[in-house]
Image 1 (cartoon, rainbow, N blue to C red):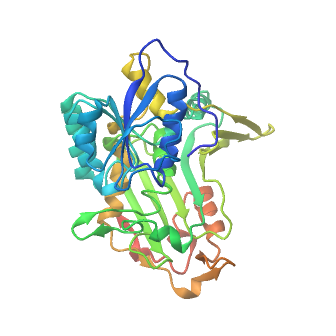
Image 2: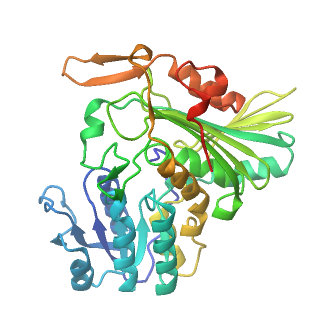
Image 3: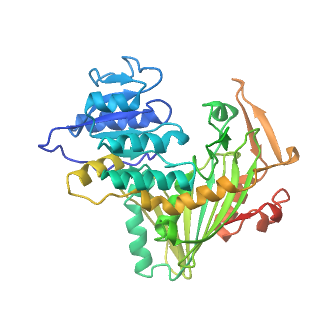
Length: 397
């Protein structure tokens, strides 16, 4: 998800580890290219690809002839994979991670790790019992900016932390919600999906804010309030906000939308008594602002999570994002899952446009400013006086 360079890892004398990629299209293409990069460093080899429709020779150019099959378990068996990268629909994550774990295969599991807290616990407990290692794919948690921000806070650079805000203003057209049968769904039949803006496309804002507070585990959360809305004709939410109060007493307020007028890079704001830090987590960029001094900006590197898993298996690094480090995020997912259906934003509050290619999208009036205001003031949409955000729609857990 980042455009920032990752920290290079030198090739080792160890033979490259065989990797199977489950889900190589859509976002899976990013993982395919990352595996290509690591293969060129001699760290891994692409042993297999699990896809319903096999990849073409062009898509696999430079990889040799990896095995391809739709049966994930059989592919792990036949390839002797050491690592499985799972980038498949959200409801399949738990079963595929456990299928790998049962075979002694380590896992890089795309976020969100599961569609419910119960499924998350089944996955995390099963992986632990199998004795394998699992990394959850929140790439922003590999940013070295996180340690830089923690050091600034510990040094008292911005005084006492008052709260953390987050804003995400993205643009997604109608086709985005038709990209897959599960897209924009809360459930399919009796199966949870929970493909909402807080839990999938802008999930990094939530998880990264919690990590910065040192509140990543499930037991670190005191309460959660969520306001879920939708402008598009979907089941899930596309414009939402959440207030998470951590056991440390920190309010974490994240406001996000897929219906912005102008797309912008998502960011987090760490509010202090004598200054604040802005963190654009996709770019690993920090801006420090404090009274009596000029602004200070810095850009930091990033550790790739698959490289980190490889280093962990070699005994040279701690795992950056083990399952339990996403337990607090999964508490948010569970709150969204069990909340009332997202409230439709009235048609008077959004507009629909169509470009020259016939691509249509909906824009919520004034939403760009609202998500920024939420992050800046640590307030929910309903508290900002938004007409379509009724206090009765707030869901707490």
